[in-house]
Image 1 (cartoon, rainbow, N blue to C red):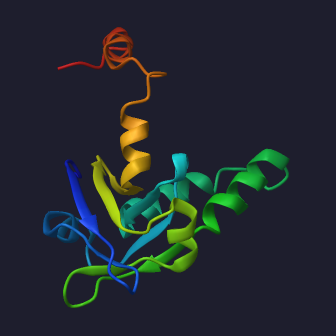
Image 2: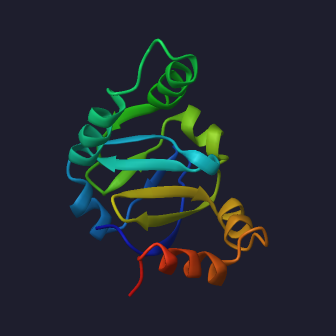
Length: 145
């Protein structure tokens, strides 16, 4: 399970160190791609395969489902770490998420997300969301500690 928040920097070649506890959980081969809210999603291969299995139930005859499949899946690529535990983020993904200098790497249960640091701070401090109010709704759904 992925949890936590880490701040790291990109090097000149577009590589970033992924925290060792995440590397262990991701394994040698994993998938990285365009996520929602302009961040990148990184999935362990088993989680990716389970997710793809669910997406196979979408209909290519449905225009919106077809669009979603094309847009989402085409944004992903198989990756691995170099010997120093760094991830080379492809240029198109760095551009998509505006990853230049500092990034925030967060664990979100079954995947990690890579954010532009300023984008993460803006998202985290967005007044559109009321964390306490959302927590109450979760409680109403039977999700609580």
